[in-house]
Length: 312
Image 1 (cartoon, rainbow, N blue to C red):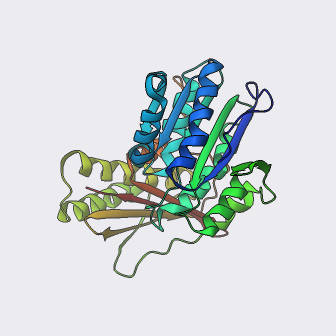
Image 2: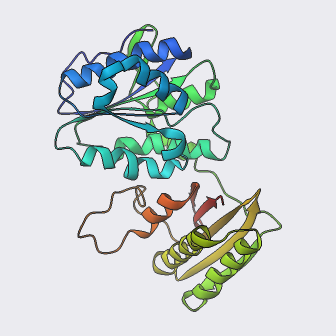
Image 3: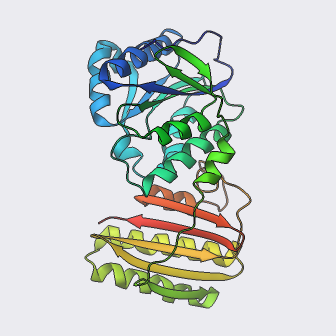
């Protein structure tokens, strides 16, 4: 595996590259040099990868690991919708200097429900950091991920690094990748369905919380269900044509709440833009991303659907 080096000065620009590696040794060969190069330049560095890779990289860095922000992606990024505002931008915005990040949002073990959200996250990183100085490297384990996943990675990253070195991706098209995973989200036949408008917001919220409570939700997590449904339904009333349809169903020991309306969001980064100290409103979708275990969105000709999964 070729070590990752910046051949040009990227400290005043944004770089978002995919690292194709096979196995732990190749992962370490590339990421250790990438991290140490950032530290040598005086750049704040964060590593956000699943625990096994995090532990291996921490050991390989030795004393240098104390100068790196180390985050378990399985925990911090279990909902891909929270990675940009609450992990990447939170780290980048806390430093006046250009930052360097190793981030592995796509890893073996992601579910079929999570994966489309991961691809859309990778596509939106480019828009979120447009014009901002940062260097992001996203590892993809070619020995454990399907070939179609690597195709998506080439679509969401302008540069790919593999065993032969870096190359410009011939498939780079983040907008196309985003739309490829903008798939319909049907409500299952056994779901509760609650149409709502402004006057029906309270009924919709109570229906969802009663359903969750019957399934074992309690305390703070039950309050999270109420908050999610309240925010999504209020957003539909305000921006989605005055109302919508709430669907609620169980998924194992968790609950899924889905809201559909006739609106079409003008901003794909809605819910992924960090809140500013003096921001008036606009925090609802960001809060939903923060507390949910997974958020999926579909935008079509008939409107928008937002699906939120919460585990106990």
